[in-house]
Image (cartoon, rainbow, N blue to C red):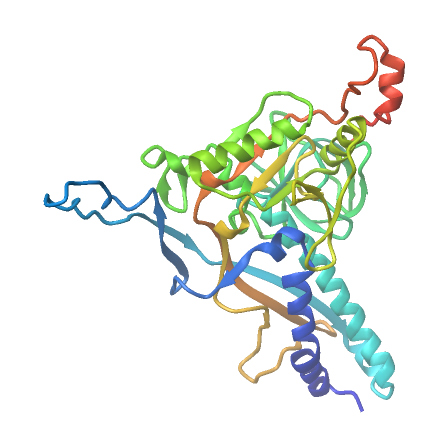
Length: 409
């Protein structure tokens, strides 16, 4: 017979390992490439020494002269707070009781809940990798009753519960997204929204403002500090960035790679871009009669190969953007792997206040640190179509057809 105790045991012994493996390996191709560590954690903070430059104790000398003076390595201390990552499931008492005498029905119930948790957590992890740590998803620019126009919708999905903020003040909280119109960049929520007269509204996942892990957006931002270190005092904290409107090409990519190799001793091993940029790159390869090589990555992901470097499209990368990364420089520092929150009695499933439902909470305490920010690159303002070099410059109709007239991201 199925009881709360057997449900707890199933969550601990059967489902936890599967969920943790799915999230760590199969949630996102970039996340799967980043190493994990429980080192450098002091209480609730990550404190680590990041080396930069080279040892100064080198030089040449005479056969009998003095040896070069010894100089230590150069370090800077990074400091960041562990972020609290949560995922929750909810099962009604009625559902548990109705499957009490049917093990198969109960297994299906838990499996469906776990699959939903994995999907939601994977989406959130992927989004945070490319975010700036503030947790902002988009900006609301207009609203009509419960239909909200946004500046972008790649971070939004049906079922997500969001908060609207006016500057730093809550404006409308716990609104659930019912539909995302990805063509017109609009969302439908379960509450009516009236826009303030003087500003747009920032959209965050419920309770998450300024609580995300420090993603790529923070590394490439104009913030004065990164991991508690002043950028002006340490210019090497600023990565390579190009924002000149241009078409995609191998030369554009290789220029960034060469700069990083020559100036930061960084070896790029992962390229991420939007689907629009990937399509433009495929058009470029086709225009130059170049074969498109496909690579299989860990976690079941596929990528285009650029000189042996995987190039993947990720929905969370801005439409005109490409990142070139050395994932060896990134570490996800974690206090523990994914685990269930347990009460004093050791139970995972807990009854919600005055409601006939039981909830279970998955948790991970972690933060993402890049040891070498200047070893990474970002190229933005990439056009979503490519001119075919084998057609006359004034043959606009054929140019459009050759590129697939692919202007939508």
